[in-house]
Image 1: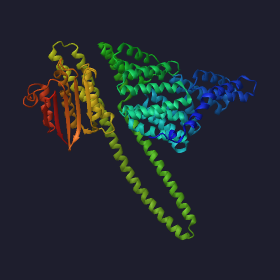
Image 2: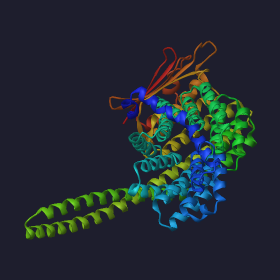
Image 3: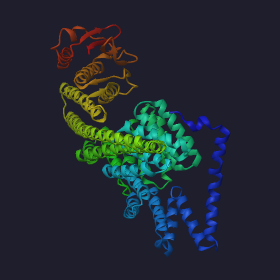
Image 4: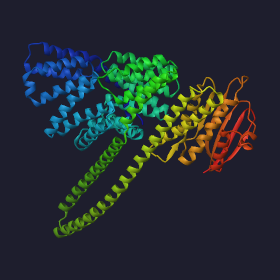
Amino acid sequence: MKNLFFEKTPLFLFLLFLIPHFLLADSYIDSLETVINSQADKTEVKEATFLLGEYLVQRNPEQAEAYADILRDLPSVNKDSVEWSRMMYIYAASHRWQGNYKTALDYYQKLYDYFKSKNDLLNVARSGKKIGSINTFLGHNVMAQKHLLECGEIYNAEGTDRQKAMINNSIAGFYVSIEHEEKGKERYLMALKGFQALNDSAGLASANANLGMIYANQGDFDKAEKHLQAQKIYNRVFATGRGMGFHHDFMGILRQKQGRLNEAFQEHLKALEIRKSLSSTYNLCESRLNTGEVLIKLKKYKEAIFHLKEVLKYEEHESYNQEERAHELLSKAYEKLNDYPQALMHYKAFKTKVDTLYNRESIQVIAEKDALYKRNEQDSQIALLSKEKEIAQAKLSRSNMLIYGGLVGLLLFSLFSFFIYRLYKKIKAKNEIIKKALQEKSLLLQEIHHRVKNNLQVISSLLRLQSKFITDESALEAIKDGRNRVQSMAILHQNLYREEDITGVNMKTYFTNLVEGIFNSYNLSKDDIQLNLEIEDLNLDVDTVIPIGLITNELVTNSLKYAFGEDIDKAVIEVKLSEINGEYQLIVSDNGIGMDEETILQAPDKTFGQRMIHAFVNKLKAQIRINNVEGTKVIIDIPK
């Protein structure tokens, strides 16, 4: 999406726009402090205290809380509901930015309950949005969704353009947290459009940052870089360390996705140093998690463990999301250090957190509420169109000089509307039944794939642990091969429950995870053997993907085992999948010592792996060819 702000604003005007934020901030604080410390009217002193507390909640939350303490001791504040709510918002926001999410939630809940009792919907939405956002950070998904969707309904009905953009931004963050990235991207794009229309720099920074992360996860690195650089420019408008902390952390994640690990590590260190000086322990823990992750990839496991254990020390926010990720990464780090008891302990803790976050009951509740919110949005649009139609009809009736003709027209319109209404009700009822059945089916299938993936991961872990106690080389090799085959199935089911289309698999993502997983099982990196993947953006059904994945697993494993001798200067393995002339073509090749064609074509019973390749080729009704020139090249033509 193009950035309209930069396209339509000349550079010198943009620089002029930046100047007041840098030069006037200190003078604004000084002017308010002068009023507070003067002998001015008590009402003016009180208002200056409110303004300064509200201004400092993000910039200096501890000092903002101190001003809230001053306001709390004023009897007039506690007697006036408007002033009381302003004071409570300062307390809530300052605790939030200090990372004390539990106490922040308590303050926002008091505000929410108060405004609910007064039926003050806009303030219900304001406090409810904060409750929803904090619960998103903590991993309390059902509670987060409840408040964010309620806020969305209120703002869609009577909110300002800025409030609508902000709630779209918050709802997008919720969708991303439950791994619905496409829904999140749709909402972030809506928020970005709204913030662009308002020239809201803070909102533009947030929306661009989050879109950058989504595009990075989807592998569209150019778009990710563009949005993150836009975020950096908007952060400069406010010159807050908090914004730059997000920028460096997100850039580090992007560099990790690109495989530029040393650059990623430097970006995460910059974010970590910034966030050590700030008050939010939640953001500090995010940086430690990201630093730990890249250190594991750099094989600096003990340093990674230090940062990851620090995450589990904080009790101010108790984020299920962060604890889940910390235990998962600690399990990997300890496993790499061959400390299997610690690895297993953290893996069990990780599994417990995952089951807490994504249990079937919460997933179903979230899906039902999401469907209800969408239906309410559609009903609001229908109501708006109906209202516009009624206005047009009223104007037409008033301009009609023929009273009897108008009455006849009104009668006909009423009959037609009644008929349409009855038809609409019937169609709507049928659609709801179908929609609910499809949602239930989708949820059940996703849950099945999720459980199957978890069970396969457990089997893979058990095989890994078992292999540590086996000394016979052939048995050890068989265990490793079996683990790779199980892992290929686990990756398949992981892709299925994360995708919107749970009947098909994106082959580009699947092959990338599959082949990199095989390399990891042999403790190989791109420096040891060059890996070239050329996978077209295809979506194949499960029955086709299973044999293709297992065949690829066997062929890549055979190349790693047998293809390369000591006289190979630069070892290369290539995996290609494409659609040619109405068929799929799978090619696995290496530049090794070559393989006898009879090994696969004429001796399928020689090994279990060869028998499996032969069986799956027959199952796919495919044709297999081998080229032994300058290595081994296996070509399999698969009919649709």
